[in-house]
Amino acid sequence: MDVMLMLCDHAVVADGKLYINGGGWDQLPANGPPTALALLVHVPWDEMNTTRSLVLQLVDEDGGAVVQPGTDTPILLRADLEVGRPAGIVPGYTVSIPLAFNFSPLRLSPGSGYEWRAECDGEPVGSVRFRTTPE
Image (cartoon, rainbow, N blue to C red; front, side):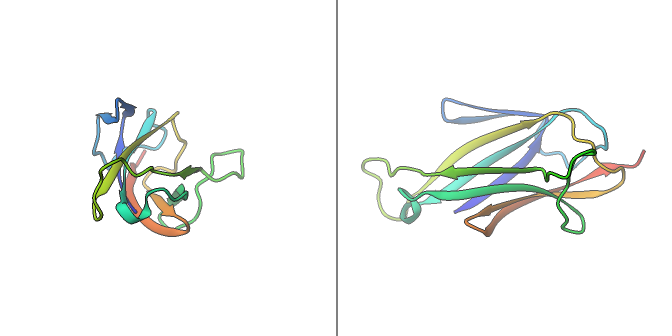
């Protein structure tokens, strides 16, 4: 399994499609607007019909967990995924599953680097980096 991640202003999944607004940015104000994370999870034929654990975590440029002020809870999303094998699918085929996560404004340090990391069953499967603008 691998995961393609994209930063955007807003994302939604409808009718099996990923709809993205304001996608592809890599900079935002430290106390900026709401943001979203759009994903395409690519599941190979031989990994279908198996439950997999997907974890998305926001880390700083040193690889440390990002927490919001006043908390000690990391910004972390967990999901168990199981993609069924569609009828008639041939060995070697890959299915793409769209996912969208929207966030209220995150309070981040100005002039700093961040990365959303995706792991599946503890193994890295994708990431996307961005920076906050200086104040």
